[in-house]
Length: 185
Length: 185
Image 1 (spheres, rainbow over the protein chains, first blue to last red):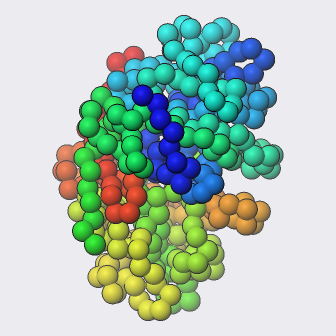
Image 2: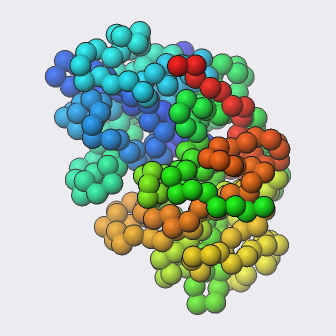
């Protein structure tokens, strides 16, 4: 069940480097794409940065709406995540074609991708110089959510292997979120 | 053994989101600190971005030299990595105090932290506005290296569990690099 994540814990959804799915909507159309280059850059209020190629339809929607959801997929969505990273949405409804279920988000027009384990609703900051130089977008996280079977009280649970995050290496090869290691100090 | 990584493969050292150790040197002093907010932002030539608090001694050294090494630690360095993230080097030789072995890098003055599984030699780009607004630093990767038991021919091997990367959640809790998952498509 989707539960709110405290703003001060939102960075922990991204801190271990999971691959994400960026979703967006504008002018009655929606799309989503896989994105590995997404990183927290501040704790509270939470803020993040992502890199996005300007030839994607998701880019068109995000730059038009200045909003997105950073969805965090899990092991059971491996094929979907890779398909979202290797097909485009310019010429049709990619979400329908791939059978991606979405629901409305709470604060932004971009949709939640269902089946994911966490969601960060984001509004883009006006940083035209950074966007132009590096295809890099700075966003404020306006709300964060997580599946309570995967992440609760500020921590990933690892209780269900199918709900672990996935971490892209290259060309459809991922690593699963591995076992918990705790420094003694 | 440390081997060169082709520039076009350098992003794969970071793509799955490992925690890193930033090392730096200036004016005859050296230091290193753990950093999770490090991300590739371009393929070739490789480029990355990292976030670094301005109250650290590593920040002093990096902003003075405009160089650093992004070292990628592994499971056997869990305690060291956490110690490097929770102590500071302003008032002494933190590297000596923690018993960190270093060797000279090839292209930059910052040292390699020995025992790591990969190293990216970096030169900072002049981006004072980004640095001031977000404590975010953009760097060109001038050379990349990896331990050939951990990463070879552009891929993480996972052959030795002790050489897997570590991914910080919070306060000394990490996740290990998990098993390889390959999308069928």
